[in-house]
Length: 330
Image (cartoon, rainbow, N blue to C red; front, side, top):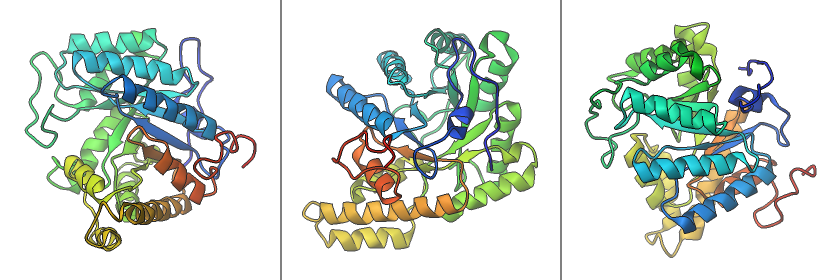
């Protein structure tokens, strides 16, 4: 799939994500990164150092996930604005959780005021219990497609380019893949221009998602699907992420990590990391060979693991060897 060409950005509008991915990249394929709102000032400084490193490595864009609470929301806004000034094309998330329609409009306006015009629309997970029952906020919306329709129907929000999440293994709330395909296409038809996948650990799941969307809708099903990758650095962390996301960890992959742990995760953490980065690299290589539009790394606000994968792909210098080498022609 190729990125659609669009008009140059107007004043007050960022380069769109589709434009960013169509621009020349230093490596064989564009890459992007995801950050989470930090919990405190020290974590915020670490995130900003990672953003600087990814800027120097040539990231095509950075996404900032969404904290729904008041202080978390303000930190999300501040971080997104600071990342955009790296400068990095910035994609901000927005969920329906605990928001009325009027509050959602207010948040959209606050994004526009800061020139943040790339938006990833999500329904969002219940706070404190991601896999728990989802309850619609009184005066709010029930589905992400409804927020997309609202944005597309109101002229003041015309500057937004909208992306969505997609789910290679199917969303855990969908009864089957047929329903998941239907829900994804509803969002694309409502006005979303691309999707970024939830993390997955079997490339075949991504390829089957791409195939079933294209088969179900020859127009909207062809929109870009950017694979989301979380570099594996520890057995404990990948198990936790799988538990929270509803994704699955293939038995063969888990067995390799368990073998690397050799009964003591702490003592053999370097070996686990080595195997995890090798697995992540192999996944990225397969995805590149299948013609994906880019690679989107879920960084956990650290640069090292993603850079190690990029280095293995020939797209970045080795960790610790200087962050400007890539832009110099590495």
